[in-house]
Amino acid sequence: LPKVVVAVGSDGLDRKHLVKGRDDLRQDAVMQQVFQLVNVLLAKDPNTKSLSIQTYKVVPLSQKSGLVQWCDGTIPIGVYLVGNPGEMGAHHRHRPHDMSAMACRKALGSVGGKGLEVKFGKYKEICAKFKPVFRHFFTEKFVVPRDWFAKRQSYTKSVAVSSIVGYVLGLGDRHVQNILINCNTAEIVHIDLGVAFEQGRCLPTPETVPFRLTRDIVDGMGLCGVEGVFRRCCEKTMVVMRSSYDAITTIVEVLLYDPLHDWTLSPSKARTLQVLIEFLLLFKSLKQASVLTASDAQNTNKLAERVLLRLQEKLLGTEEGSVLSVRGQVNMLIQQASDPVRLCQLFAGWQPYL
Image (tube, rainbow, N blue to C red; front, side, top):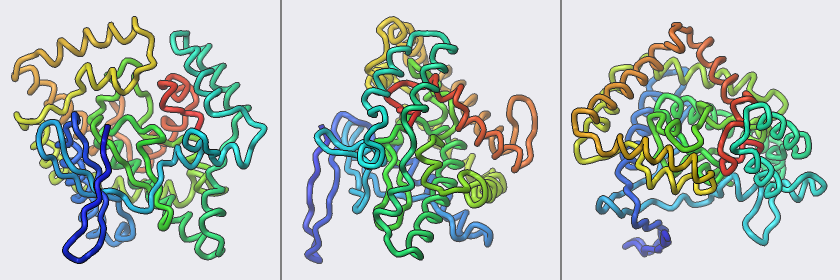
């Protein structure tokens, strides 16, 4: 398991770090570099200089170990909403008569091998008995009205930027433990960036949404929801991403063709990410994945070419054979991310009802 170590600096301050073994952190480090580049690009544009994506330091020590900067003052949104074992989360505190989160997870997992109609029916049943409560985070943490309003704005902007950047990079595995929220600034921080470039589509239960925009995430934005600040910031971020086509494709291309780094999703990683999937589905997916990981460098390069082509299409606004405007592309992404038909097909551990 990862270990938390405290280093005492020469300035006398204690600094926490997470030491991870049996985990390749090189991709996390490169993704942080991409995030830093995006922040530079956003800061240069007068329309987006107030927008940014939160970053942290990652230092790979080997192919199987590394150091991760501890994000002080943050908690996973899953911990706030559901709580740790033995603790009450916001859902239990504010809606004690609702269906429990664990019961929701079991109910959705029970139809994992069923057809779409059954999954959709079960998902609607869960949503009817389990209502979002994330708005209470802001009333609990920021009691002064001015602070409450400002922090909710910061949260909405942060979700917008990270959603668009995550979509362009194909960032997956965005379950509620991999998204932190800063209790002081209300900005979100994405961690565990090992599933990128749409490799989430290769999981035993494929991911069907471009980013996490579930009911609780939207609930934190206030009455306007995805309209207003969120949509506007998404569009502004997408404009910057499109106009920075060369810079973004260049740094991603370096990662994709790096012979020392395997960014593809290995069978063991897929198995670890979705351990509760039925054995038959898992076995079929692992057979397919093993063919990919055993391929030679030429096939790997072909895969990299396809991934780079898809990234270029996103930056050009090409979706399903049509070229969309920025507004049209953002609208399509919001619809896909919040589509209950897509959400009901996700792995139960992703907890799409939260």
